[in-house]
Image 1 (cartoon, rainbow, N blue to C red):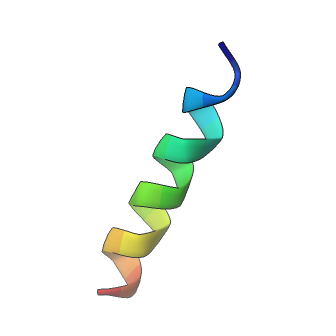
Image 2: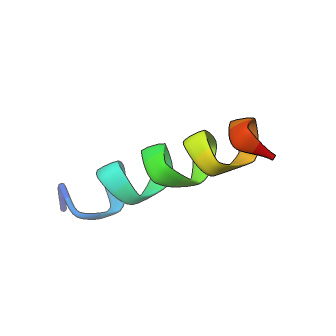
Length: 18
């Protein structure tokens, strides 16, 4: 399931932006 991996990365990036 390599689909949840990039999604988690996106969440981490969004949290960093906030």
